[in-house]
Image (cartoon, rainbow, N blue to C red):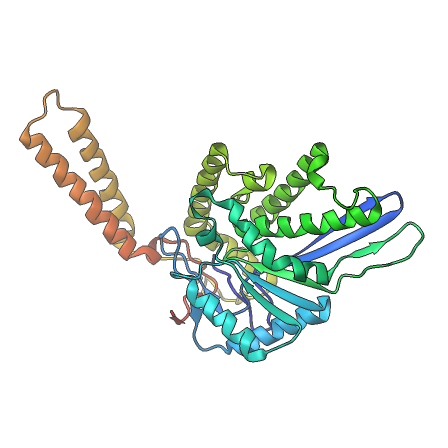
Length: 371
C-alpha cells in the first residue's frame, strides 16, 4: 500500500499486461488487456484502518504525469479504453473525478473513459448487474477486435487497442471484469476458428469452460500474491460464475492477512525493494558517524497501549467468565473494562501511523490533500 499511482516518469505502481493466447489446428489468436494503478499522483498510506482513504498528492502535476503514462500506452497498444471500477461515492470518488478531469482535458480521440461503480452496482450479491457494464462495452470490444492468424497463414483480424482496467488495487474487481472481457473475445475467436458455430456459446462445452474459468482465477491469484501477498478476492465468482459461502469465508481470511501485511510487514519489504533498485544509497559512515535509518526509537505509547489493551481484554473476559453469580458489582466491573478497551482502541487508532511498519529508508509520508 506504500506505492500507489504513478511516478515522475508516468510508470504505474501496479501494472500488468495479460495476453490470452489460443491455438487450434495451426491457427493462433491473441487478446491483450492491461491493468494499472490510477495514473495520477496519489497515496493510501496505512494507519491501522482497514481501508485508509486514498488522497491525491500535492506538489505534483497530475495532468503531465497522466500524459506521460497514457502516451506510453498509446504508443505500445494503440487505442486505450480506461475502465474505472472504483466507487463513485465516498473516499474513492476524489480519485475518480480527478481521473475523469485529466482525460477530459487531454481530449485524446484514441482514449475512451468508461466508469463503472462495481461495489454499488453489484451490492447485495447482484453480480448479474455486471451485464450493465458488458452491454456498454461490447460495441467497443467488437471494434477493437483481436489478433488471429489462420492455418493458411492469413491474418484477417488485428487488435486495434486495449482495455486498461483499474480499481484501487487493480486486483479483485479488475480480474473479475477482465475475465468477462476475455471470455467475450474468446467466443468470437473460437467461432472464427470454426470450433464453435455462429450461435454456440462456450458454456455448451462445460469441461473447457471450467478449465477456462480456473485459468483466469489462477491469473488473478498470481497477480494478487505478487502485489498484495495473498490470493485475489472474489475468485469464487470467476471460477463458478456465482458467489459462494466458502468463497466469502476465503475472502475474509485473505482480507485479514492483507491487513496484517499492509500494516505490520510491508514497510520492511518496501525498504528491501528501495535498496535493491537503488532508490536508497548506503553512506560509507552510516551506522558509525551517521545514524542508521533502520534504527528506530519507539515512543512509550507504542508499548504501553497494546499492553494495556491486552490487560483490559483479559480483565473484561474474567469479569464475565469467572463469577459463579452475577451481581451489579460484577456488571460494573465488566462495563469499566469494556470502556477501557474502547478507549484504548480509540487511542491506538488516533496514533495509528506510529504503530504501522513504515519504510525507514525513504520518507513516504508526503504532504497530501484530500478531495
